[in-house]
Amino acid sequence: MSRFTVHDLAATIDARAASGGEASYTRKLLDKGAEHCAKKLGEEAVETVIAAVENDRDHLIGESADLLFHLLVLLKSRGVTLEEVEAALGQRQNMSGLEEKASRKRD
Ligand SMILES: N=c1c2ncn([C@@H]3O[C@H](COP(=O)(O)OP(=O)(O)OP(=O)(O)O)[C@@H](O)[C@H]3O)c2ncn1[C@@H]1O[C@H](COP(=O)(O)O)[C@@H](O)[C@H]1O
Image 1 (cartoon, protein in one colour):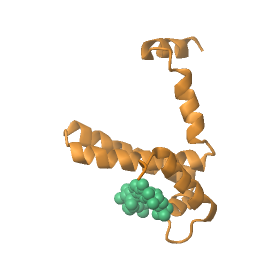
Image 2 (image 1 turned 180 degrees about the vertical axis):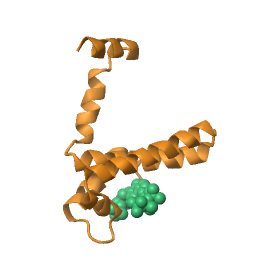
Image 3 (image 1 turned 120 degrees about the vertical axis):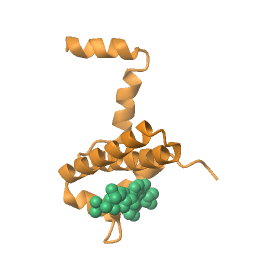
């Protein structure tokens, strides 16, 4: 069996956005709009931070999964693709984080 990836999850979210029904949580989130999706992402981020601070490994993994799911739904709600985010990361590939930070200040 091939490994499940974030791309597989993004494809499921695309499918639910196109035709998800009453039973779809993704559809429910998208129907409530981008602001609601952003609020949910914020909640999941806080829960992830708490799990990390408490050094609760299993909880951190679970909350990180929730966080990634909600980030993908938020991106979908604003028409941004995972590939576009990957491209942004790719552009930073040969630059250190500190260089990247300095380049933002010059913009
Ligand atoms: N990965 C996830 C995933 N991670 C977290 N969640 C849901 O995120 C919610 C977060 O819990 P909360 O307590 O914060 O929210 P809640 O109180 O249940 O919901 P709200 O009423 O507050 O919105 C839970 O209901 C989780 O089930 C997810 N729901 C769906 N997926 C994936 O998305 C796919 C499509 O799901 P559906 O759209 O439901 O078919 C599924 O096959 C899964 O693979």
